[in-house]
Amino acid sequence: MALILIVDDDAAICEALDETVRGLGYQPVVARSGAVALDMLARSPVDGVLLDLRMPGIDGLEVLRRLRSRAAAPPVAVLTAHATAANTIEAMRLGAFDHLTKPVGRAQLAAALRGMLAAGAVAGAGEREPAGDGFVGSSEAMRAVQKTIGMLADSNATVLVSGETGTGKELVARAIHDHGRRGDKPFVAVNCAAIPAELIESELFGHVRGAFTGAVGERAGAFREADKGTLFLDEIGDMNIAMQAKLLRALQERMVRPVGGKPVPVDARVIAATHRDLGRHVRDGGFREDLFYRLHVVPIHLPPLRERVAEVVPLAEHFLAHAGNKRLAADAARLLVEHAWPGNVRELKNAMERAAALARGDVIAASDLDFIGRARASEPAAPDWPEEDLPSATARLEAMLIRRALAKSGGNRAEAARLLGIHRQLLYAKLKQHGLDLSEERTGGVGETDS
Image 1 (cartoon, one colour):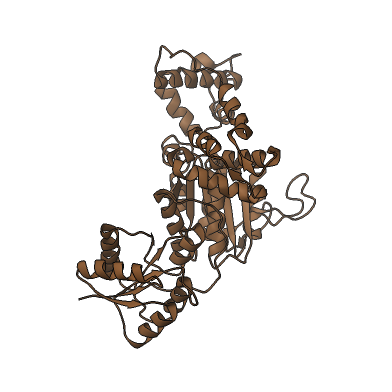
Image 2 (image 1 turned 120 degrees about the horizontal axis):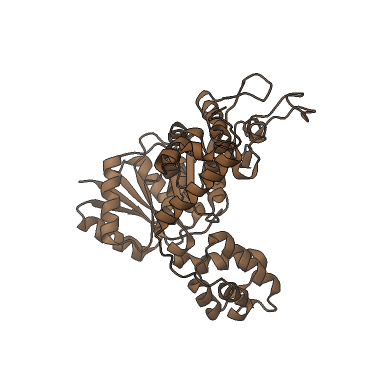
């Protein structure tokens, strides 16, 4: 019979857990403090540990740190009534098998114990102090994100964070960096969509003096600036195909070649993010499949705020506390929950900062948020339903744009592809798909050409 150590300073919780664990067919033993638990574990092994986080003296995280430094440590499930992003991430980083929120149901506890005992001991981790809360979220989806962050923070695995604009993709990247062993090294963020195509190679890889007109000095580039730390490539889906090939080579070889210079080794952990469906982008020919799989080692998806309505008010209160220690009235909370938040967490944060700056009192009422209602009222009315469906309308628009690009380029398909911002091979496929006769697009007797 498996021996399960229950560690909690609350007598009633210990009694309830003891009864449940015994009813599930395991043998429970109880420790009412972190110090007693460590002493018991030093004297005799157990098969699993249910560990409370908040205890006087030696708390749960400290027990976990000390336990993980020992050989053959048992698997641990952390239990807390006060789950935060910081303690979830840190518990998982320190090797906890799971992080459960009290009250824990019988079925949930049974599943956790089965998983713990099947997995056995989990390797430990270092003893860095946890970073502060980078984001707030208590939904199942966000708790899963926080657990993933904790489990991979100390690894060098490449991470791809996806989600709509404003969901907090950079906050996830920073949390991974801050909670990992690279946390005291540089965190360098690059927005790939904001840099012109002709400059992004220099921005990422650097350049030597005289490499091109205007290169009056040497530039290290983001990869070398992030050496030993983390490089965050935001909106990676907007990077052009030519640059994608160079990025793939840099990731594979862990070397960068500055413009006009020689290869230089780099050690930067890469976290990429995108609001696009990269899988579809690959199928459409706008993103390299090999680069996609190189980045898609550990995927993390952030759901939009409209899918986690229960977090709207806690997030709003979090932002208000930082913006001026103000709080929400009930009518204001109702208004926030009813809003769709198309800009996601970023829109909510901006709204709370605006309300905190303009409200006269310490309580934010619905009247202080009337700009949210005005924004919704000012939205244009939905147009009449089109006579054609979306695929048909999209195909018609796409064919029209291709015709215009070919006409403007005089039938030069390479130039037309450049004007359209797509790869030449994708243009060929689109010509065939739409049944376009290239001869129709030639002007001034210019012959068909690809160069």
